[in-house]
Amino acid sequence: MSNRFSDCAVVVAAVVAVVWLTSPPAAGQAPPAPAAGCPGESAQFHPCALAKAKTFGPPRTPDDEPDMQGFWRGPGLSATENIEEHPSTPDGDDIGGASLIANTPDGKVPYQPWAVAQRRENRERYIEPNILCFLSGVPRTMYMPTVIQILQPPGYVVALLEGGHRYRIIPTDGRVHLGESLKLWNGDSRGRWEGNTLVVDVTNQNARPWFDQAANFYTDTAHMVERFTLIDPDTIHYEVAIEDPNVYTRPWKITFPLRRVTEKGYEFIEDACHEGERDGPMLRSLGYKPYPGVRPGSPR
Amino acid sequence: MRKSLSTAMLVAAGAVVGFSLAATRTPSQAQASRISRASDGHPNLSGIWQAMNSAHWDLEDHAARQGPLIALGGAYSVPQGVGVVDGGTIPYRPEALAKKKENYARSVALLTRAAKEETGPRIAMEDYHVFDPEIPCYLPGVPRATYMPYPFQIVQSPETVLISYEYDNASRIVRMNSKEEAPTDSWMGWSRGRWEGETLVIDVTALREETWFDRAGNFHSDALHVVERYTPIDNDHLNYEATIEDPRVFTRPWKISMPLYRRVESLAQLGEYLCVEFASELLYAQYSKQEGK
Image 1 (cartoon, rainbow over the protein chains, first blue to last red):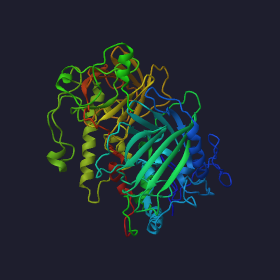
Image 2: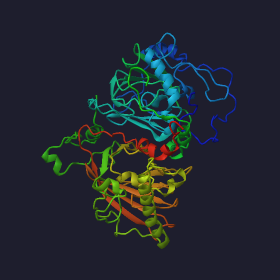
Image 3: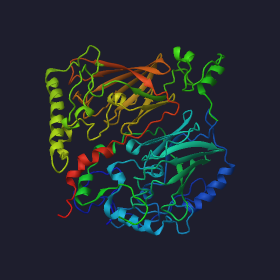
Image 4: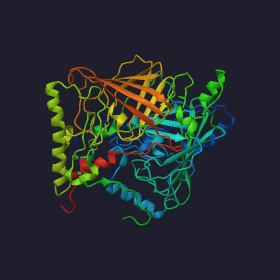
């Protein structure tokens, strides 16, 4: 039985099988919209965007960095449901969508066999960590269905999320990572500029977050490398390379466009999450437990 | 390549470039560290700051005393602290003073009862409101977020000042020179800022009533209005003042003040104090399906 709740859960009727009280979904899922003249679907967006990056000269900040400041939207609700291709569901719980994975033949996470079984066990035993308003981790923070604000003060790139008042403060001053025994929800981020690309190296993962509501997961040996590149004035090519030799058969990448929010005067309102969270008691009473992270090997 | 904005500013103004923003300090710099400047000439308050006092326990004068949980003994009892309130005492209306005392007593009683229960802590959700909201890890509000014993980071630009707190991943955006009113109440309030000389003044309205000022039960209503003032003393110290106004609870406005200290380690960064995960068992364990039943 899967958990069928979205992030920053709202109060719903207290019935055992909770459903979203939304209008029925459109039959099938719409493909992602094109971005910057590239197809929106990840495996096609990725090479097209990389080609565009070669010829686009971005505006620059006073510190001579490509200027990515402003408000941005990612791929929307379907990404946080499941980073693999997935259908909409008749009860409206999932809106469905295409895979975010850029470089596996079937657009699926290249799990080792034990990990496929572990993912199933995750769904059956554990509460989706975002429901309890835990941090979404990296990379999930970057495709949460909310607006991201990027700031570039000297020595840092800051990403703020409206949803859940999240922030990532990424130093770009060349400092080394924290000691490896410090495991963090969002990992430890270190940024540097390579040409027009912001490269962020993320280590020190505590691996308590999931990639999505479908329980796609990693372990604390995961290493992520993000790359942010403007490919036109209103589009960032976002890519994250994911490596965890204990879990996957090979490294793999998620990619999607971040699209500039063009509404004038857009600003954040507080979204408190935990203070309004009321699904915890119900999920606990059904026998679900908080996700503790997993060690590689057989499911427990 | 990292450039120093303030260095560029000084060169542009024709001044002699004389100092660096490096966090390692030499004895000659320590004496009178010049306040760094933003590109618009105002003091640059960007950096990581932290209060160093026991205001988070109690804003008023307090001798050391037993903490809220006897079971934790000397490890988690309350240290002595000189109050940060101008004039010493918070000017409560008489009925509000009774409620303040009740706040603390009820919170302690509930925690003590919970600690004794054999099956683990059981606090019913309808009882949350009697707690210090720090216990279920609700957002701390303003000014409490400033003097929680965790660092926070100021990211300053001319249009907005971001203040991100290690505690509870709290964060607020200060809208500079804005007349916009809050669309709704919130835990961290609606912040509008302006410069008055060397002081960053932040006007905070639309604060939810549920937050407390400290662990001693000092509280307010949703009529709370806070005006903060951040004034550099030197490059590594700010003077922080907050004027508190709430005619439903207090007989007059009152003020707290304290220094804020820059975290000068060259590799200072905010940590994660997720907090919410540490409140999970307290809030939800009682609902867990019993194994084997």
